[in-house]
Length: 280
Image (cartoon, rainbow, N blue to C red; front, side, top):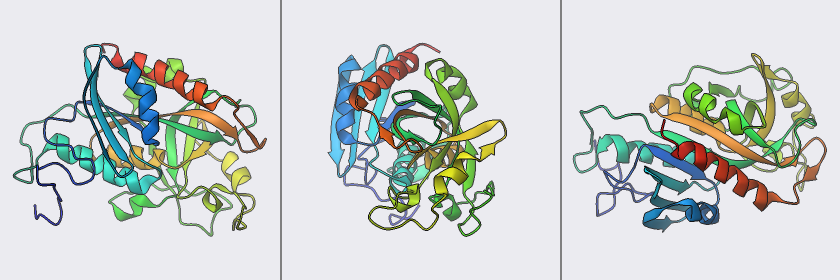
């Protein structure tokens, strides 16, 4: 593979994450904010390294008997595109030779621990929501060979979102810690793309109501954020098992925000790590 396609650092680590062959364990946790990793570190029994590059911070450690990698992705599926592709390269490719390893490895398991706003009045603040699947209004998968797209009535003026479900194995495993579950909408921005009309007026004033009325099978659209669909879809193409868990910090329909956001996120982290570190 040409050097322009797999860009490496001088030490043969992947360009953005600075990870080398042998440094990516099977279990990975992603968070958005680099500082949120500090809330995970006290749970680790050992830290092997802690590296930072731009918004990407990578920490490898041990949780009980399990090796674990924690990565901050920053915001948005443009960063998810970098993170998941470079994780795959460091895990599944011989970076010095720039070619895929001949041996088969168990799939990476990637857990997103994020925050989100709900679109449903019945979902209270400070609850934990599991994304059964996602609709991507960020359009990342239009650049890959993806065929599963959704039609949402009332949004004909927008390109069709891509549709994807999370790992069934991980959904079943983490379901006991989730207060609610449903379909997550992934937006490509925070203001207009999430129906906010400040400071500029959003093009579709009924955006939230239209999304809240939609469902995929028996799963209603429940929440809105900026990464899950990209993680699920790229993970599917890269043979990863992926799951997104969100602390609900805002209710967009009721226009309220959590007063105990840090406490809620830390509780979600604690519960998720207990499940992820258990022998399975």
